[in-house]
Amino acid sequence: HLFNVPRMLEEGGIMNLLTAILRLDRLSKKPQDSTNVNTRVFTMADWEDLADKKSSVTEEVSIAIVAKYTEKKASSGEAYTGDTYMSVIKALDHASLSVGRRLKVVWVDSSELEYPEGHEVLEAAKAKMASA
Image (cartoon, rainbow, N blue to C red):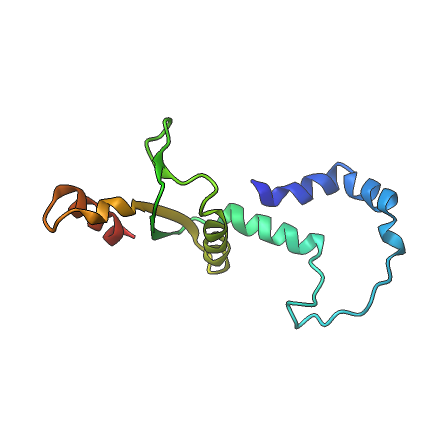
């Protein structure tokens, strides 16, 4: 997955090449406050820990998102929204990882909630939301 890319670059020697080309070794290294997340430098060891955590998470958390413009993936029949809600999904993915869970998004098309009470489409949408 994506979190392994920095590790693969490091193992392939690309990081040393980039450091040389961009002269990153000439940057001044100011002391960082390791307790302040906003000023702490994210190291390769941090990336490796994050990648390992992402790979090892087995428990799932389901979150329902009511959205417009959902479509069905032809391959799986699952709903998706393209890039419309990407920042929301990424934020939820990072939040779920921070508590040791894998994110499962349950998409609910907002138009399904416009049916009258008791209609099968509305009831199915409610069931999807309740499952999360």
